[in-house]
Amino acid sequence: MAECWAACLGDCRGGISKEHYISQAVSGTGSIAVRGFPWCRDEVTVVPVASFARNMLCEGHNSALSPIDTAGGNAFAALRRFVDIAWAKTKRGVRLKGMQQYRVDGHALERWLLKTTINIAYGRELFAGARWKPPADWVETAYGRSRFADGAGLSMASTASSIVRPGTSTMGIQFLHRNRSELIGAELQLNNFSFVISVLPIEGAGLVHRPERLIDKPRLQLHQVLRFDW
Ligand SMILES: [Zn+2]
Image (cartoon, rainbow, N blue to C red):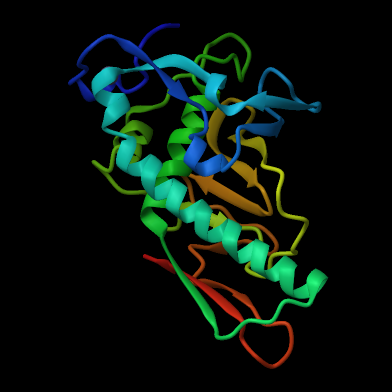
């Protein structure tokens, strides 16, 4: 299926080019442990990030996504630092001189999660009988030409993240569907965080739609705050 998944935008340019499922800036390391992908399901497979790519976008639509890759990289760098510091404090007794603050562009992170879901699902037989292609509204939203419906977009499993050991990059995905026939989004676990991206409003226990912030406040004192700009 060597065809551009953004072809419905009508302005394809250049030949078909390799798009990485997950950019190096996001993974932070040379390899990543993945789980739940259509071709590995329940097993955990370690793959080199550089080769984790497929021909699925034309050159024009590939390069048009680079600001989103950069924004995704920045978001994950902030999230990684947040975890590293929380770990250093609790496990190694490191003390902070002052409160650490981070900002993340929420809309760009949403678009990165959406295009990553498309990258993984594209051309796969997710439901019997047909290879999945993103509907036009998914593509327009991924390229910032339209917005998510009210109540749709990013949710996080919980604003109080449990801190697990930093270092290894891991990525898991679970597709979300309606009636086993229509893909509506995915839950993506990236390192210590769980993100739900959906084109429909969804509800779930402990799910926070477009969270305002993550805080690291072990006792009375606030140590770290990561704000999402919306
Ligand atoms: Zn294209």
